[in-house]
Length: 315
Image (cartoon, rainbow, N blue to C red):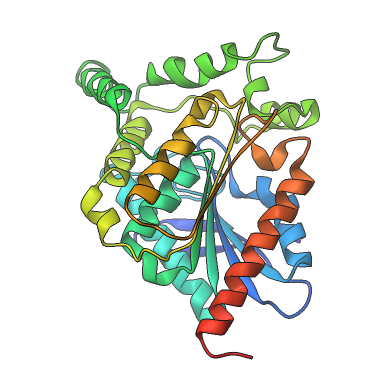
C-alpha cells in the first residue's frame, strides 16, 4: 500500500513522496507524475496493482499540490520563478532517490495529463535516468492555440498579477466540462465512472482554479516539449507508451496524443506504442475499464524489464 514520507529536494521543496513497495522481489520501478489540480495519493489503486505485479512505485506531489510545501510555492503555485524547471529538478531528485534504493532495477516514468507533459519534458533532459516513458492524456505540442494562450497570460500578468486566477481556466477546464452532453457535473469529462468523478469533486485537493503563474509555467513546459533540438538528442530506441481517450476533450479526443506519435515516428523513434481508447475520457486510470488498462501497462512494463535485463547481460 502507498506510504507517505517527506524528503527535502535541493530546490528547497519538502516533497510529499508516496511509495508502494513491490509485494515480492521488485523487478522494476514506476515513477508517477500526476496531473494539474490533483495529487499523488489518487494513484494508490494503480500503485497497489503494480506492486502485485512486482513493481515498486513512487509518486511525489508537485510543488503547490497535495502535501508538498516549498518557501516559494504556496498552494496552486510551482514557484516564484522558473517553476517548470523547479518541478523537473524535484523529479530528478526523486529519481536519484529511487536509484539509490534500487540501483539495479529499470525505472519507467509514467505521467498523466500535465504529468505527461512533465514526463516528456523530463525525458528530453534526463533520458539516461529512465528506461522508458509513458505519456498519457497529455499535450506536448506548441501550436497556434498555445501562442494565443501565451499572449493571454502575458496580458493577464500585466493587468492582474501572477497570483490572480487565470481566464485560461475558463478556456480549458470549463470548456472541457461543457463538451460532455448531457452532463451530470462539470467534471464528467474526467470519467464515465460517476463514483470516481464524485470522489474528485469531494476532494479539497482537487479541481481548484489555477493562477496565472501556474498556467505560465505550463506554457513554458509546452515550449520546452516543442524544442526539436532536445528531441533530436534523445536515443532513438527510448521506449514510449502513448495513451489517450477518444472522448477526452483535453486532448481533442486523443488528437494531441496522435500528434506526439507522429512527431516521434517522423524523427525515427523505433519503440513507440500508441493507443487511443474507445469510449474513454480523460482519467484513464479512473475509467470503468481501468483494470484492462492497468493489465496492458503491466504487460508493456514487463517487456521493458526484460529488455533491460537482456541488455545488461542477465539470464
